[in-house]
Image (cartoon, rainbow, N blue to C red; front, side, top):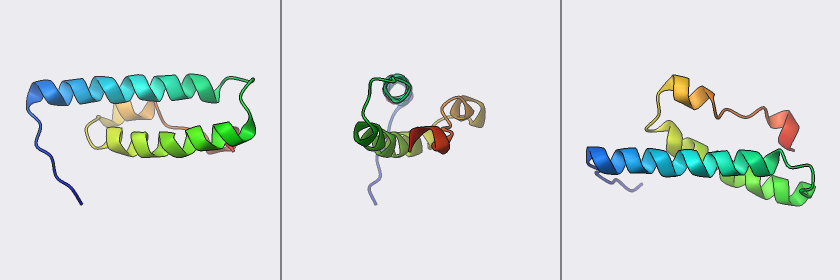
Length: 73
């Protein structure tokens, strides 16, 4: 386990970066031109980034990025 201390500005920046990354991955997951194997890799990475975002986001903000796993297998 690794611990990092962030000040308020850094925390907001991390929040922004994680949200943008999640948004990009959601666009890729919804792209019909993507291969199934690529979608699996993106979904796996999405789970990691989502867990990171869950540590700093409110439940309301977090619900926006919750995946329905049946669509991305």
